[in-house]
Amino acid sequence: MTDQIPDITIIGGGPTGLFAAFYAGMRGATSQIVDALPELGGQLTALYPEKYIFDVGGFTKILAKDLVKALREQADQFHFKSHLNQNVTALEQEGDHFVLVTETDRFPTRSIVIAAGIGAFSPRRLPQACADPWYGRGIFDRVSNPDEFKGQRIVIIGGGDSAFDWAQQLRDRAKAVTLVHRSDKYRAHGATVADVQAAATAGRTTLLPFHELHEVRSEGERLTGITVRDVKAKTTLDIEADAILPMLGFHSDIGALAEWGLNCEKDEIVVNSLMETGRPGIYAAGDITSYPGKLKLIATGFGEAATAVNQAVHWIYPEKKVNPGHSSNMAIFGQKDD
Ligand SMILES: Cc1cc2nc3c(=O)[nH]c(=O)nc-3n(C[C@H](O)[C@H](O)[C@H](O)COP(=O)(O)OP(=O)(O)OC[C@H]3O[C@@H](n4cnc5c(N)ncnc54)[C@H](O)[C@@H]3O)c2cc1C
Image (cartoon, rainbow, N blue to C red):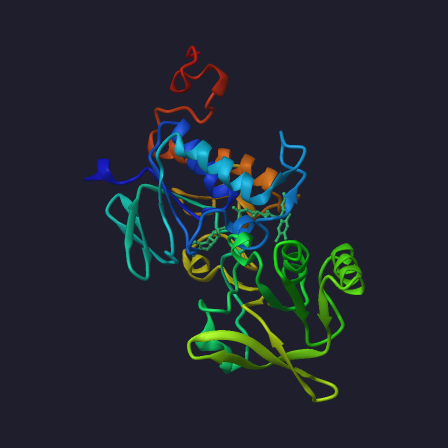
C-alpha cells in the first residue's frame, strides 16, 4: 500500500508547485499537485495571464500564461498527477503517512511540500444580489482566454490592477470596453491608469467613475447589458453589453494550514534554510514562506522548491543524498551519470 502512496504531495500548482513537481520527478520521486483552483498556474493564471514577466531567468520577457505552459511541459516529463478544484482543508496522520483532506477527497502522501502562495483565493463577488444568477452566463470574474470576448461589448467593474489590465488588454479584441468604478480613485498601476485614460480620451474606451451596478438587463435567459447608477447624481444609465467582468480583487486565506502545528506567522509559514516548517516531513516553498530576506518572486520560489523537494526526498529515502548533483550529468535525462 505504501508503495502506491505518492512520495510528495504539493499543495498548490502555482509556479513554485509546478517546479517542485518537475524536481520531484527528476529526483525519482512520485508526486501529485492538489490545487483549489480549476487551472494550474496559481497567481499567473488567475490574476495576470496576459502580462509579461521580465525577471525569470532565461527569458528576456515571457507572458505569464506561457511561463505556466513551459513549467507544465517541464513537469509533464515525469507524468505528475494534478487534482484541481480541491481545496485542502485538513491534515491527518495515518500510520506512517499523512492524509490531506479536501471537501470531496482524501490524498494519502508520504511527505508534503506546501506551495500555497497567498493561500486559497477566490474572486470577490459583486455585492448586488441582482448579479448572482448571471455568474457564468454573462458575468465572469475570471478571464482564462481573452479571445472569448473578441467582438463583444464588455463592461469591466473595478478600479484595481486586474480591472485596468483587462481594460487595456481587451480593447483591441472587444467591440467596446466600458470601465465602471464607484469612485475616481484607482488602485491600479499609474502607467496602466494613464494608458486607459488616454484610450478613453481617444474614444477607444469608456471610463465611468462614480458609477456602480444597479441592475442586470436581460431578454429571457440572455444578458443584454446593465444599468449603472451615478453614486453622486443618483441618475441611472443603461449600457448594452454581452459580458460583464467584475474585477474586484481576491479574498485569500491560508485557512487550515495555520492549524497544522507548523511555524506560522501572519498567514505565512516561517521556514529555515532547509525549508522545514516545524513538522517533520512537511516542507514549504514560494510566496507562503517567510524568513529574513525573503523575496516573494517566482525566481526565489524555484530555488526554494528545489531545496524543499531535495529535503523531502532525503527524509523519505535517507539513503538518497540531499544534493542532487547536476542535471547535465543525470542518467534520467539520458546523460552520462556522475
Ligand atoms: C499582478 C501580479 C504581477 C506579478 N508580477 C511578477 C513578476 O513580474 N515577477 C515575479 O517574480 N513575480 C511576480 N508576481 C508575484 C508572483 O506571481 C508570485 O511570487 C508567484 O505566483 C508565487 O508563486 P507560488 O507558486 O508560491 O504561489 P501562487 O502563484 O500563489 O500559487 C499558489 C497556489 O496554491 C493554491 N492553494 C493555496 N491554498 C490551497 C489549499 N488550501 N488547497 C489547495 N490549493 C491551495 C492556490 O489556489 C494557488 O493556485 C506578480 C504577482 C501579481 C499579482
